[in-house]
Amino acid sequence: MAHAFSMGLTLKYLRIKFQYSLRTLAQKVNRSHTYLARVESGDLSATEDLLTRLGEIYGLRLTPQPADISAWFDTLETVHQALLNADTEQIHTVNQELTRQASDFHGSSVTGEYALLMWVLNVFAEPALKQESLDAVYWVKEIGSLASHPLNFLVWMGLSKVAFHAWHLNAALNRLDQAAHVSQHPHDRAWIFLEKANIRVHRFARQTALEDYQKAKETFGYFNNYKRRAEADIKYDLYHRRQIHQDTVDYEALKARAQTFLLQDVLAEVLMIEGLRAQHLENFDHAKACLHALDLTHPQHYFNACMVLYLEGDEDALKGLLRKRPNTYVMPRVFAHALDFLNAKTKNAPLKVQEKALKHYLHEGLKEKLYGETRRAQYELAKLYETHRRYKDAVHMIESITETILNA
Image (cartoon, rainbow, N blue to C red):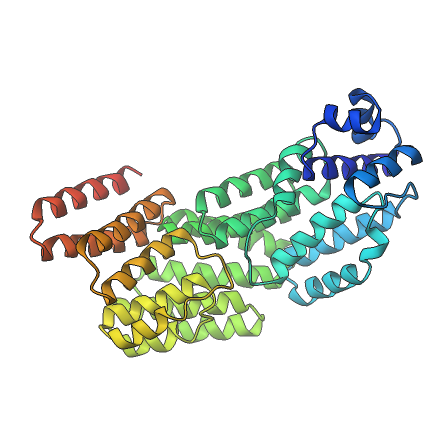
């Protein structure tokens, strides 16, 4: 029955992917829709004739030969543990092995699961995220809600990561909540706490973020997950000291710890925070040294690198950097609107053009509760209004935005 259930998931996955309703597909294969529904649920095994007909529709040779389900579930567990442990080397190794074995899975009973697992691996293995997979969205919407399957948790975590990279923070948090419904294991929950904390620090909800980092630290420590514990510990120190003790952060020590545990993303975050702190103190040389040392194909890092040049007043360098806008990622809307403003500013565009870009920047920041970006947009818009003696507009905008943030 395990094979029938797995093949049923694959058939449902393919039907949804190709956007067929049960009734439409049933007519094409000359079967009843209730029969197809029972095959998809695993109550009945798919006949060889049915698989042949469906394969012709999908352009795929479906085989009744069962995959080694036991080995497949071992693979899912290996991937799950590698992601939990932030074991980048293991993630790449499994990714490469499964890519080489693609022909073994193509058309087998785990065709759908294989496609989704490869998407998950690519999300976590490749930094150049371009878009979320519609296959993944279909899976959790149409299949994940019906099937208790270990892949469901990984798909939700992958969807959350994609949303976070696109700075759709509301969607990212929602998907983390869905992942929490799928798995109750404390190790998985610790990973969710860590990811939620990463989102909340960008919303200035630092007290809640610190509580989540603390929960993650304790659980990862209990499971002897040293790498993840170090990640939570470094970030806790980074944001706790900034919040409670002004800025007594030992950036060099935190960067050294991140390098010791091969936490490149954490190292980049520490460097970014150090640069933003220097920028706030108007120590632009140090701010540029930090922010321009980061990977500028990453939208957030690129935006920060542009902004420090703008705040310093280095218009020539800013113009040059704006011409090198990265295309590795899809640029999140909040940063795209801010960059539109910087472009307009350097070209002395009309007031209406600059105002429109800043309003979009402001509203996108509010929508995603990115209050740091909201305040920055508010400040620039107020300056723009004051320059053109629109004092009432400036006061009204500042009061309404401040009230909105306080109420939130």
